[in-house]
Amino acid sequence: MAREPLTLRVFALILAAGTGARTAALGLNRILDRKIDRENPRTRERELASGKMGLGEGWMVTLSGVFVYLGSAWLISPKCLVWSPLPLTIFLVYPLLKRITMWAHLGVGAALAMGPLGAWFAVNLSFSDFLPIALLCSFTFFWVAGFDIIYATLDEDFDRRAGLNSLPSRLGRANALTVSRLMHVLAFALLCGLYWTTLRGLVAAAILTAIGAVLFWEHRRVDDVELAFFKINAALGFVILGFVAVGITGIAP
Image (cartoon, rainbow, N blue to C red):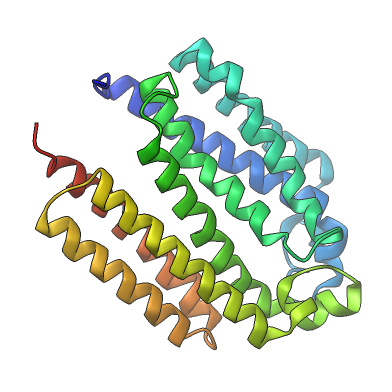
């Protein structure tokens, strides 16, 4: 089925919606976790936890993000506005999951998987030809959940003392990292599936190989969470964007 061309207007509105949604998600996370953050030595200097920002200010920032997100969705299409509560619901639920399940990392994966799904729907305005975006969203889900487990190893001892749930605090660091590796293997397999079903070209194949190598390197450096989580994953996001962009342009008309 032929897709509508991506216009500059829609592209700008997608970026605005993503910025608003991310602001809302982070704001809700900080508001809901402010008491926990205050007790955790690693997070006690965050704005709400430390008192540098008041709770009212936090809500203002969060609601501003919601307003930008909903307004951008409406300007793209009323159809987008109809579906817009779904990501907001996930943003509200996932910070609470650590209180009830050690699989709270999946909530973070689901939240970030809404990004590619929302952008895809903003362009297509339908759920037809769903396989490519299903593969990309599933990749994002397992990729993000996997590296959130790595990040959670920083709070293993605190989470255990505070009675919070995470894979490191419940299964131990080694077992949790094994789950993370399995999630990243599955994520890479889904990305391979996206290449074989939708994308084309030797350049895209080379980038795909590089993505696999970077994921492998990340797990070789999990002892340095600053490098593995903040630097390698930040760079990997741009590499994945390049992989999809190059792969799309390599499709024969």
